[in-house]
Picture 1 (cartoon, rainbow, N blue to C red):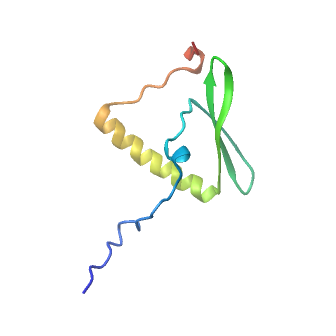
Picture 2: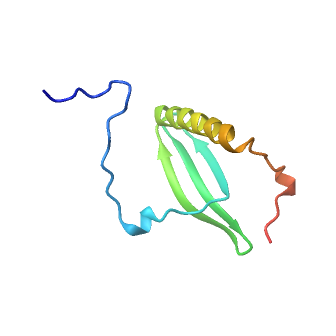
Length: 96
């Protein structure tokens, strides 16, 4: 008889991608806007050459809530292991 899946574990998802996407992108700024139906997250690279849109992700409100929960859990795990993340005051951030 086959093992039953653990109901506490989410199902595994096979993700296929191309190299360009799997390499990832770096962003040091995020802008968020929303309507009644969706949230739009614009990931920006703020560099000496100006600000450049790196990626735009559009999410449903439910997916935003799930993303916030997942990020909150993972940030706590990170801080438990590596210490508190210190935020820099926006006025102190400089692009060289």
